[in-house]
Length: 320
Image (cartoon, rainbow, N blue to C red; front, top):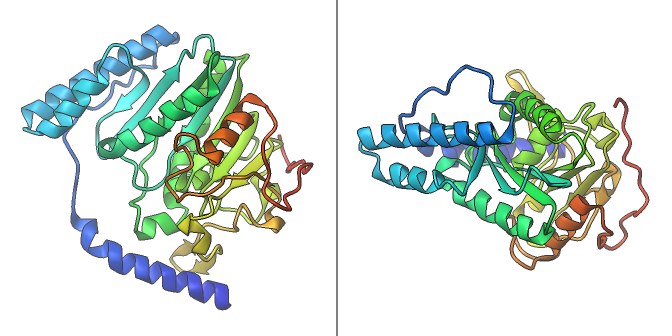
């Protein structure tokens, strides 16, 4: 095992020691099992089904005395909000639309990272709303909390297991979105461990842009290994602690530790854009450089580049 491998293993052991005591704490709230029938084909039907699922979960939360969850679900059930799907079991699955998806020419699918659950959904919602405002008319943002995110500080967040489980669901959702809005320009925006999910879902992916920001790794050695013709973008804010992680993978008898190469490293082959200052949670902060450039990528407008970054990389991998 080389120096990078030893550093990664040490980081893993530290994370495990921190996460171990918290691993026994369960935040699960009882919720009904979603119906097994195929989702309605139209947007109005999807929104109605999503709201019905939220209301049913809210009734279960009240029945079991979970007042805080019940209050949050009442807010989510506001008829003005639009959910393509909802599952209140475990830590929750939420897919919400911001903007008018029916008329959107540009759609950003936002995939969150570790620690985002139904109870912390407000963080994802706030960022989605700010991105939607930055995109303006004829655009929509979809917050895709469609997988069981790992805990923020845990062994789960240093392995590919959760990402490998989530990737098929993300690919299936993108297929559904293409059927719902066949003419729209769809971009996949992936934050933190969400970029690992996107990396595992990338082979053959057909979207306008694949954006990895605040990424601990996409599960591959370089952009070509993503096996997609989609342009691959990457960025990191100046104060993001992810930059101090040992970007590597170590093969152990029990599996792989680590999430692969650093997407903003020159050898990775991504188009590295300017994310400005701020920390790991500031990419979608109002008025930030990162938010401005993310919106420009979604709309196909020119972006500002980091010093020394190549502006003409094709980022074309194998497959299609």
